[in-house]
Image (cartoon, rainbow, N blue to C red; front, side, top):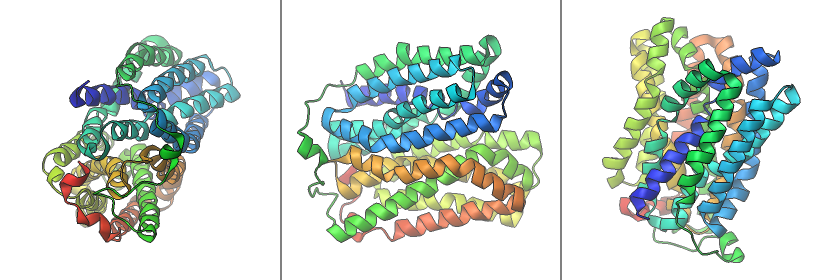
Length: 396
């Protein structure tokens, strides 16, 4: 199986996985709440449980990929996604709703980006950078595809039928795509769990490695907090700075294309440079957009949205490439899972916490996310110098 075919298969399967999990509540939370006689916030609380479960499972799924390869883990995630979505479609009470989302959380912890990145690193080692970027180019359209498909399914078949349809798509599309991935020989358990051996792009001392891991976990947590907060509240933020409702929704729709544009930029121009440069530039994008809004107000809303989307798109790639650059490919899956635990936990509370800030400060809440973005950029500048010894090609 060629690398391009592998990237296309994983990217398509990731689009399905994200569309049927992370982007599902936006379209189905209200219909579910109305049918089950609960507040929409209860549905989002159940979704937060899924994120917490995925955070807990991530390191174990990564370790399994290190040892067995991504194929069996991703196939299992499709089966669990199907079971969880079917359970959601059958839910008739609050406990059943939470149990269904917990099951979906198990699939998210073993079937979203971290698992796909670990899969291509297991396949291609230090040469996985371009494959990671390619996967995100495909899955960048998950919201663009997922939201209208979920809305259409709900309109024609109800929310229960929509859940069942997504479950069926995991069995009919996602599972065969992941089953096409190359089989890999089973790695020795001790080797899979051992610390990474020095590689050309990962010459760090023990102290530098500890500092890099701490800083990286912080950057990832901040990135996911900002991304999730904006995904939940961007139209409200734009309205708070004086943009009308219809225009705010139109501007918010620019995030998806801007993310893809940022990833194309990474795949073409920035691919020639060190991945840390890409990450630093991307971390500055959201704060720069906030400054533009602070100076110009509503007329800068589109600029802010595009900068935020492009920066977020590139930072998603950095989540996959920076651990590979700094620590090497050995034990990548488990390490990636551990680094993403804070991000998943923060992500679970981001919509609620940023919503409180928006209620209290209005447009001023944007300065909170901007300051967080600046702190992430500072953390990236403080990243150990040993990673700079290899130019762009080292992690590609």
